[in-house]
Image (cartoon, rainbow, N blue to C red; front, side, top):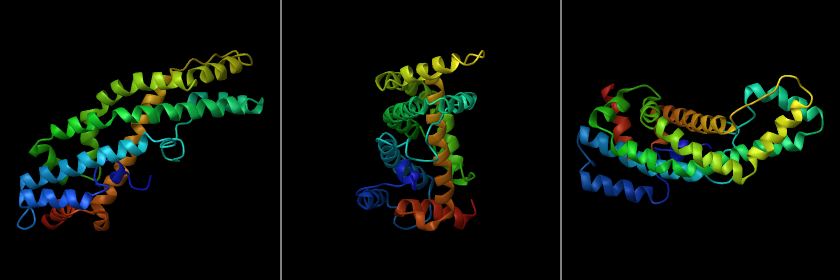
Length: 238
């Protein structure tokens, strides 16, 4: 995922130029100083379109599994278990468990769009100014504050169902039941909670990286709205 603000919230995809121009024409943003209304409109437009693109990308097959930064691996407390099982010839069971965890995260990502859109609709002028004036991850922090609890609540049942559907829970149980035959220390991990947490953390991690890029790299501002909002931030020293 080279462009998660394409993916996640700043970069409109197909027909983005038309959308941006329409907003500019309707709002009179083509000329003149940046206003608070410009900031709110520009941010909301970019964020709304981008979140839809992002969740579509993340929910695709291999959206998590084939991205090195997002791929969900065994939890730290289970890494010794994984190593032991692989040495005993059970590598395929471990691989299937890991694949199923990532499939669960990809399935859960489908439920993120309305949560982000709800947070965007609630954005006030104060919120927008805070994002504009804030650090490299101020928009990400806004979303963390407004959406984390809702994402976890929405993701958990979806992930639990997806894990069952893909037999992840079965493979997880297989992994630890096999391991427990050879160890006196039993492992009991809540797989659904772990995958949910990693899915949410992975999304916000990527969003923060790309938010910093779009603030610092003028070439990443591909719509007039973004150029106006973030360009004015620099010019005004906000």
